[in-house]
Length: 386
Image (tube, rainbow, N blue to C red):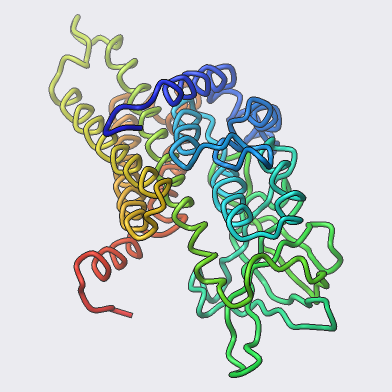
């Protein structure tokens, strides 16, 4: 992308993803979700076509592109009503971390499968008493000969039942100070001592949330990803992509809601006039469109900065994009329901199911309040409140 113009390759990718997603759409997505099933067919096709691993290195089966292209894939799938949450996790967070910091053996073992979708890797950082505060994580890893022994508990971990492995954020004891410091471990989901339970959620989604339990899980030495002494930097290498992808999902969802509302108000007539002619509906929808487009621009800026290697600039932009897209998406979905009136709360029109899902964009993967803390402290230089 140069300035605000996507390259021919990016435009072609956008069209190809939109065409594939249109073959599935929201009806497929909701049917799977309400049946308690996964969107396996969609995931498999996206993998075969190279969309899931478009950001990963070519030498390991990826597309050799960047976060801009992966966020584009996410946006178009969400705009079709069939976003894949695990794209935020498997290729964006974990694929990025393994590609940047994994050993050659780890890259060869995990990246080709992540790229073509035959391997899904979940990500486990959140804990019941720590949230995403890595300084309070209590999942610990201790040495036992050449092995690691991992013990702890995680919560709100997405897609564990779909995953062949989980990238777990734990802590190790510093041999000099005794203090705990973060470390990243790849844990195959069939490892003895690893278990999980599903968390009942009101979100209509084919991708589920879990509590994860690590009970004296024994791992070989090569389960450690990257340096034992640089895990904070390695961890945050995956969190900027996470925020960019969260923004992409919210932008796509906002587009989906606006499209639904526009189609409805163009054809719904009261007193011989389409209700879309009334400014009470047309102006709010126009405002929603503006807000979604502005959020999309910030998302594109964040992805461009990340792909150029500007990690500091990308961190600010990614958080701004995540905030802007979450707020814009919530307002767009709410206005879509309002435009459809009672029909907006029926199954038939497909907007009611998006209400709760859109609210997630204000909470995860980072809450809007924590984004505002980050911007206040790093962009404005204001003192910390915590």
